[in-house]
Image 1 (cartoon, rainbow, N blue to C red):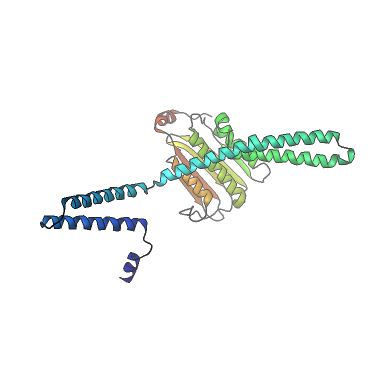
Image 2: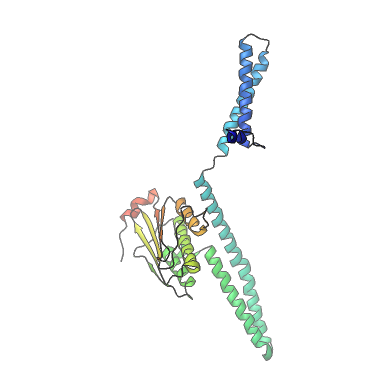
Length: 297
């Protein structure tokens, strides 16, 4: 009893409680005016009309405010992913166009200086040229990760192969990419989501899993595009709610698959590796065409 009373007298009251309290007062005022008027007491008709109009306005405002604060979680997640991709594209353009051009100009200037420097300064100039070249390569790599431009020109399979080659080049991970079917006709959203999920999974493997073997498999199924990512690393305990439990990478994967109406299954145990399966359903207009495609060996 005490707890319920304490919850009612909280100060300052919430906006919802304030709206409800105001609406209740207006209802009581209007009902009282109607009662007085019905008993033939001295109540001007204009005052009754004003009370009823005020009650109507407050009720309409209450209904509109309730509708305005109801956000759809899926719409919010879709919007956040769209903003994230747009920001990645913007950063990629700035890195490639602005910083990349400045580094290229600096490298050309350092090469020009190297040809004119005395012999005793040649070693320092060579180190400077190599540093600028390495920095330029790193900037281009980051730009490609932020905005995989090759998706539109090369396709999903070739883009994933290029990413795996570059990312795992200097590691001890043995990897394979299996795709025995043509992946033509994929929507841009599906290709980007599959690429980002694989990208996040590979990053997690390098940071935490200490895996020796990695398998990425793409399959064109009648119900949609299947993506399998399997490793023999340390594994982990998948969280029921990855976002709340700090597994941001897994939360991002779930948001991307949810955006396309697909399913994501994560099977992992400590010491037994990890297997991630994602299924991206075909759009209704492409379902019949996808179902009729045959496996090409």
